[in-house]
Image 1 (spheres, rainbow, N blue to C red):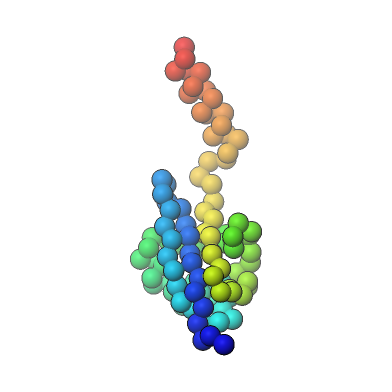
Image 2 (image 1 turned 30 degrees about the horizontal axis):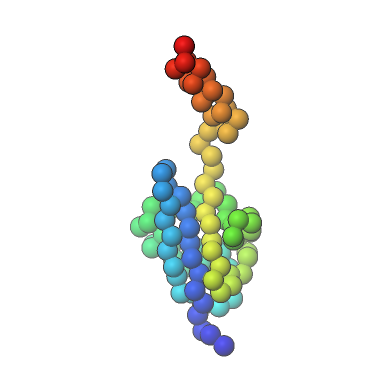
Length: 98
């Protein structure tokens, strides 16, 4: 039995993404992982208040127990409502064509 497991953390920036691998103790929750690695994660530019998390595209609670090779995905709130954004894009295209 292993003492530590490998997981990855993925999060998006405005035009790219960052991924970082971590070796963590077994049976640790996402909440514990964030608390233990708080300084490292803040140095990476992440503020974990009011964010959602997923494992391979499925949203999970902070109480989720991480498993070997899990990929934690950090979901930031949308800055603009997607429906409103599509309307703005359509308006801009229409104005360019006129």
